Image (cartoon, rainbow, N blue to C red):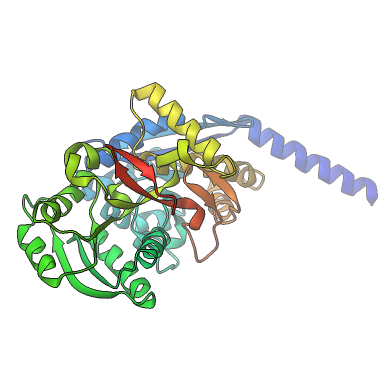
Length: 383
């Protein structure tokens, strides 16, 4: 009996090694490298070059498509990736609405997606379909914590909000309201603007009339500049806060002097050179930034980090899944999903990830810092 157990164990090990040696995992990657969301999709596409090509004896093939910022194209492409390319997992797409449109297809095909998007709606509330989606950026409430902490330290009692009139703005408003109320901060204005609006003066005037101690602006990259610029030019003297969507180079490039002093919830990878050596993500974040800068001549926006960190998650999960099934099978895709959900204390460029069945973002307070714009660059706020 003992010899039989040993034989079976050795046979199982040999089978696993054989599968691993011959296996190739196919990963679809979808981003918006063209169209209105290209400022997000281009650094995500660029970051594919930094993804692992091999895990042990298992090679990884990345199959890339640009959805042109069009949710309809995202659907067409996922159908192709699932039926023709027979992918084992997906990284992408770039836009929140694009991701939301793919959830049903991915669930039906039992294929996990690692989505580098901001909206928590991709994974919340959790259900049988969203259990196939994993976010690779922190949820809004995690990022919002650092803003509320700063407001409390600075004695903010009244707050105005101005954000996009789309899921990004709505998600942030829903996240910040209960947190601010719990902190004793009263909302005195709630304004919205479209991403295509050339002016937000009407909204700015209403905010000024409410006389808030601080204003939170929920826009993305250069799109967060108009409210900031309007408030500064109209003489607003209160504190101006921003979501992590503003922690991109174009926010400074377009806003210039008008964005000096803005307070922003940001990814730790934005200020790697200012992080203490004790920070668990410093080395990985700095390595990603250095590799990206060497390849493309510029530091990566935070959007690219979501793709890079997806690669780190797959690098850890694939060996666990391949012990149970061969890539290209439903059994492997199910095992990969389970392995991703079992991710614990994984250090990535944006922090540390620990997934649970109810939390498919998995980031905690180690994923964010408060930064300000000083002399034309993002600088860590230390108080």
